[in-house]
Length: 421
Image 1 (tube, rainbow, N blue to C red):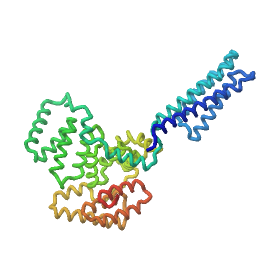
Image 2 (image 1 turned 135 degrees about the horizontal axis):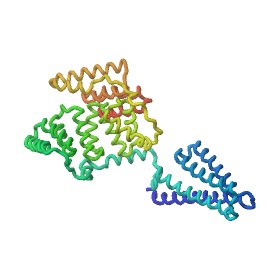
Image 3 (image 1 turned 180 degrees about the horizontal axis):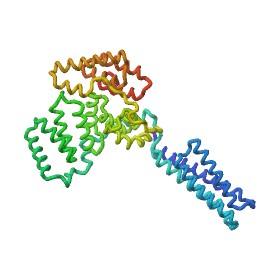
Image 4 (image 1 turned 45 degrees about the vertical axis):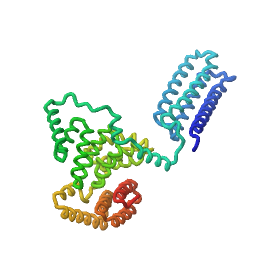
């Protein structure tokens, strides 16, 4: 195992040595012209400052410094130029000031150089860590994802629930009676649905999640994507905005039923950002912005976070036009699946088979957006038509070979259908 502590100390010794060496050169450069020169110190200072301004512009053009840092340096140098110019005009600089001013400036520049370098590295770098290859970073992120706190641990780390002070006594009594009713009638699905909604209204999301989990248990195979999304949403809020492994599993189930669902994809992007994969989380959120629509519930939360996430991902990002890249999907929708719930099991299966076959034929002849291919792959996997799902997946990967966002979507669908690693 590499000696990280030793490498860390070596790095700081080298950095400190280089900074001091450069600072000494600055001081010597500032002092040298004054030897034997009859030129006022203020006139020489003006030349130095103007040279420094030109160097700042060169560094900015080369991308060595950021615009904000350049502005701060320009302001400081400009202030010194004004001071030196005033001193030159008044011609009141004494001989000792002529000798001492360059040294003072050099010391100030040295302090600024060393302190500024430390500040920039502390804020932009990662003190204490060696450089890691991309493969190692991905492996570390996956390990962190696998070992992150579970739902109960996340909830236990938060302050205990306190009922709102302004709650109506009548409403509080109604909710309490509902709790007792559900406790005495554990198989009453409608009771659990109402309890989940009302607990959420009271901000008691842990209790709301438990009730919604019971709804899913009672629905069984008849549960639809929205049932899972409601459950995941309550889990995330109960954990203070943290996407736990339990919430991730629920979101995966929701996406297996509705691969294009925006709420589930938003939370998956959040989970990736929380587990060391800002690159993939950024791509998920960017695609959601491009798809829109503007009034979607996930748009504002993404807008509030995506610029910070893009910086973490190393992307020079400009917000896209929301909804500009939206592609209408024409495959089986969640409404179609809900309608199928009113049919007998055999009729429902026939309906789904027919819709899947229709989508498969249309994509084979006309093509379509990546979301429809993902829907088809997922549906074929659910129906147990693994061979066909694999063939469709491989075909789709060839079609969208140059589109990384589409490949991410297809990979998730292929993994759900168990035809991709």
